[in-house]
Image 1 (cartoon, helix red, strand yellow):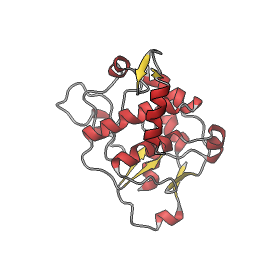
Image 2: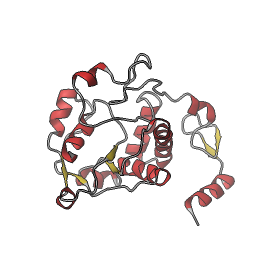
Image 3: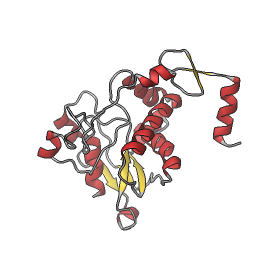
Length: 220
């Protein structure tokens, strides 16, 4: 039975509750009011997705002074409450329902803001030891949620994490960049193929951009 049909049957028999307020949410993982209250960026910077004061500018001052190593960023939501709660549930408690909310919001933002699509999606890889401990890669789960509606392949073997690093939380921007220096590598078989020239990196959170910077540097 197709996944969507199975989910519809489950929703009919066991109506879902909102992940945030606990009230009945119909067929979704959030009720309408909680979804409407999610923090969004009205005028994001085209390069880093941080909020701009008005819609007059398309690139923030920080990106003009120090352009990032990638072309543009699309963020589904702002990393503020309750998004931080949903991310923690998804990443550390393996809540696929929370991941479904995040993926749905990211997909909607891509469909609204994307100026053309890449050739493929590349989830930011975890080091094998961390993935073994968590039992899944949250970035890959998000990428696979996006792949079908966007009609794009997911490349899980293009990029790998060649060095185990400290967790980024608690580090400032400079230490985050230093922590991830040389942590990502393109696999030899992929490096010799000219096929993938325009890909989109997928991750669950972007704060300073250090992770995306390290991945983009390896891919370029």
